[in-house]
Image (cartoon, rainbow, N blue to C red; front, side, top):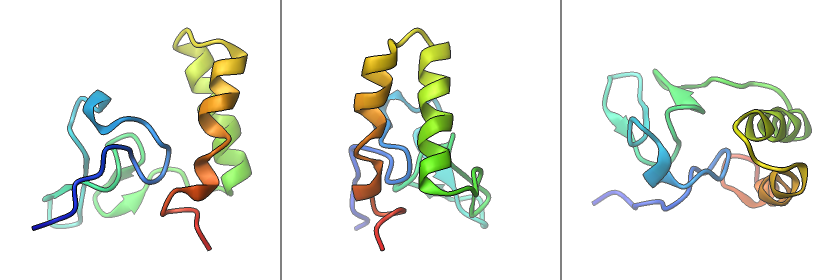
Length: 86
């Protein structure tokens, strides 16, 4: 049985908020580790650095109505997610 992740291991978004309930692998199967905003057809949709991705996500969150502080708090822990761990 595959491990069930509560948060996307790329952006940290709660998986229950993903309208597609996960990204997709190359074969079209669901990927339950990454959300559909981050991962599709077996590839990451954003290929920049962690710092660039954090700024991108902060901007998207603010566009969605979150405050600058909440956006910063949400994205500051991204480096601990599986995609970004070294």
